[in-house]
Image 1 (cartoon, one colour):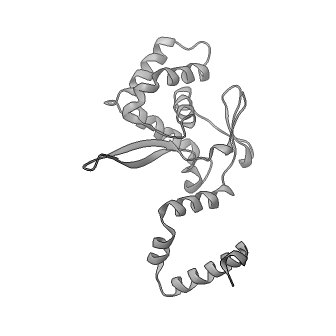
Image 2: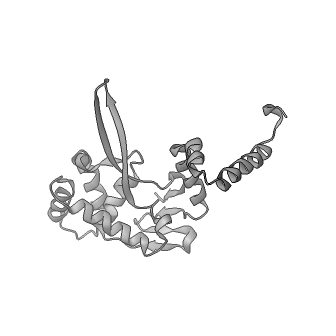
Image 3: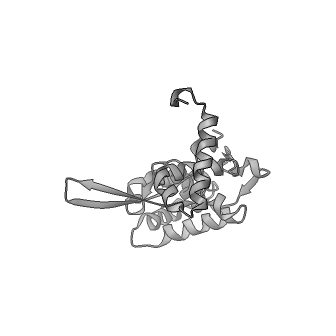
Amino acid sequence: MEEQKRTPEELAAELKQLLTALQLQDRNDLILQALGVPLLEQLRIEAARGKLSRLLITKDHRLLLLDYGQKEVVLQPVHKAVFLLFLAHPEGIEFKRLGDYRQELLDYYLRVSPASVDRQQVEESVSRLIDPLDNAINEKCSRIKRAFLELMDEYSASYYIISSHTTKRFAGSSRIWYERLKVINLPRELVIWET
């Protein structure tokens, strides 16, 4: 049968047979090599979509998991501000460059805080968060992770937390450096902003 005349379903059935044959020969290494890491990551996301919940950010900045019985992710204002900053930047942010996002982080923090909040305390807290020599940002990310793990399994939570993504960069032929981005991997079509 020619390639053009075969349906996607027929191709999938043949692929399944080939994968099964390779697995019976204990050659998962060849399967991995044939699929490649980028495709595996896409497949992982696709497989998780059925388990992932839409995330609603309400007008009053509550975080609700709509498909998990509208469970609320309870975070303190500082944690919520950090989460919203990273959610607004699907491309990721390097911790060492958080200073570039100082005003945006401050804006989120002030928005999610009670009206009676001491602005000077908020600014001091933001200064600690963006200080590359302070561990405050890592502590906040750990608390965000704990909040999601209280509501779901670790695999699902990995899409909602701030996690590492390292990219190899090349400058010319001899210079190589690594961009260590922190990202939230949740597909953004699952995020609903109620504003």
